[in-house]
Amino acid sequence: MGFALSDMQLTSSAFDNHGAIPKKHTGEGEDVSPALSWKGAPEGTKGYAIICHDPDAPLLKGNTYGFVHWVLYNLPASVTSLEEGTSEGTSGVADFGKPGYGGPMPPEGHGVHHYYFWVLALDTETSFEEGLTLWQLLEKIEPNVIGMNRLVGTYQRG
Image (cartoon, rainbow, N blue to C red; front, side):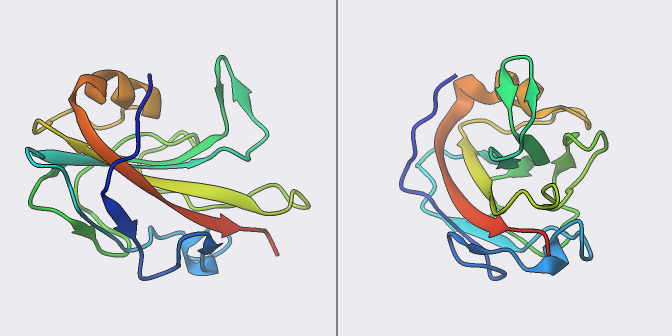
């Protein structure tokens, strides 16, 4: 599976690109998803999916690596922002083993981790069941991804 970045822009009012994610949005804080907004979706966009992945996590599972913190999908094209702690869309299962957002919490003494928040623009509306893993979602949407971009946040346990 290969995806290329597009002209979409993903931002958060909680942190800047490559900036520190506030403790509120981590497993050491309130563990609520940060507010996100995006613009510049390609013409023909009919839906979105959101993913948060930590490639710095020292985990290998089969041919995958890192740790998935959030899988959110079934977002219609009319949605171009998510409020903090959103209840929009349908939750997939993160690597914590439960649906919904699970914030950063790298192993103690492991240094700074990078958290990639991705927005994927789709050329179709989706109505997938709750509980898909990242890899199940990507398998379903790959032919329909027409644009994507990321926002990177950092976090280090205190």
